[in-house]
Structure formats: structure tokens, C-alpha cells
Amino acid sequence: MRWLFFFATLSLSTSVFAEENACITCHDLLDDEAATKWSQNIHAKSGMHCVDCHGGDPSQNDFELAKTKEAGFVGIPMPRTIPTLCGSCHAKEAKLFLESPMAEPLMTNRYMACVSCHTGHRIETLIQGKVGPTCKTCHSNGEPGLVFAKTYEASFSNIQKKKKALETAMTVHKARGMDTESIEHELEFVNNALNQARVTLHSFDFVPVHAHLSKGLQFLKKAEKANEHLRQKYEKRRSGLIFSSILLLMLTILLGWKIRTLPTKENHHE
Image 1 (spheres, one colour):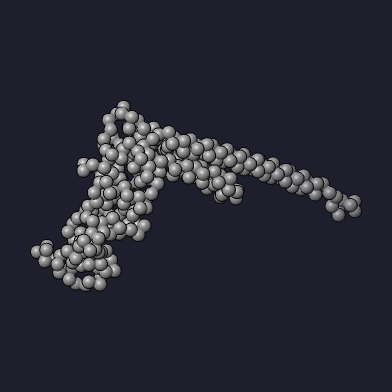
Image 2 (cartoon, rainbow, N blue to C red; image 1 turned 180 degrees about the vertical axis):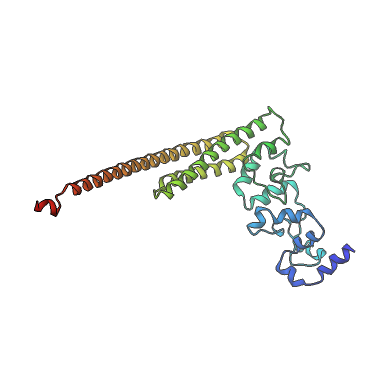
């Protein structure tokens, strides 16, 4: 019954599949979780399609015609071809990986190179909190690989936490009508350093990774200094406003007292 529904759905309209991605439509009908994972990942959201990695013809409503050699169908890429495939967009990361000591062990039939860490159809970015657990799937506590991962994650997390605190402070400064360009300028360098650290992580060499994190920390300190300068400037402005308000109040009271002591017309006639 399920297959009758499947083929009936496929025959409804060829044009629908031509406009959409027939790969996803078919695999979704087959309850293939790859279709669900793909639709939620960052590559799908950026406009990529199944054909970009697997080849084939996504406009075909016949799965045999969609997977012909003439259509360039690849299927599951071989482990050794994956870095080149991913490197067509992520060139620097792929180059660093292929030159790293992890390239050979991660390009066997057991492991799938980039997919081993980033997964296949879900495509995960190893954000804060995920690097250590990912490396732990192969490395044990105390091993250099896991020490490297934990050290990187602790440093990266520290910078990111302080960066977020500065971004919050910057929002407050803007609400007070203050110019935050000096902080924004330094935080842009912090973001660049963190991105470089993420990319360089693919070398599995902590020396260049640490160098980028150190740069990020230096720019962060400059941003913190700029933030403190704005805070002090606001406090001075606030103190000046309070002083001016008190002075104005005193002058108002004095003026009121002076007016009350002026002789009235009645007093003048007497």
C-alpha cells in the first residue's frame, strides 16, 4: 500500500519535481532521515542541493534516470574524495586537513574524512561545547588529541564569553547615545581572529591555532579598554549633569527667595 502511494505521488506531476528537489521528495516519501537532516542543515539553507555532492539529475521523477552515469551520479563518495569535494568550497580547511597528521587515519573505509567530525547530511559546525565530545569519540582522556581539543575549546569559550559581554555593554552605550565605533572596530578583529582559529583547527596543530586565539585576546583587551573609557566618560557626563541639576535647583531657590524679599507696592507706599 505504501509503495502504491509512493508511485502515485511520483506520477502526479513531473513539473513539480523539476521545480523542487526530487531527491528530497523521493527520500522523504521513503522515510529516509537523510532528507530530514539535510533540510535543516546550513548547506541547504545556503542554497546547496544533493546534486552538489552526490551528482545525478534532481529534475527526474524516475529514480533510475536520476542516478545514471550520464547524469554524473556519484552516490556515496569514497573517503579519499571527500576532502577534495568539501574543498571545492572550503579550500583552506581542506588544504590544512590534507597536510595534517589526521588526514591518513580519517580517510579509510572506517572513517569518512570531513564527515567524521562534521557528519554527513546534518552538517554540523563544531561550535562551543562540541569540539571536546567530538574528539572524544576517538581519543581518550590524557591523549594529546583530547588535550588539544579541550585547551582550544577553553580558550575559544573564554574569548567568546567576554566578547558577548562587550556586545551587551555596547548596546547599553548606544542607548545612552554614545559612539561605540572604537569597541566595534576591535570586536571585528576579535571575530576575524576567532574565525581564523576555527579554520586553522583543521591543521590539528595547536601552535598556529593558539597564535590566532592570542591575537583575538589582544584585540579583546583593546575592546575592553575602549569600553571602560566609554563607561568613565558616561560617569563623568552623568556627574556633570547631577552637579548642573543641583546648581540649577539652588539658583532657582535663591531666585525665589530674592523675589520674595523684594519690596511690594504696599511696602513702597508706606
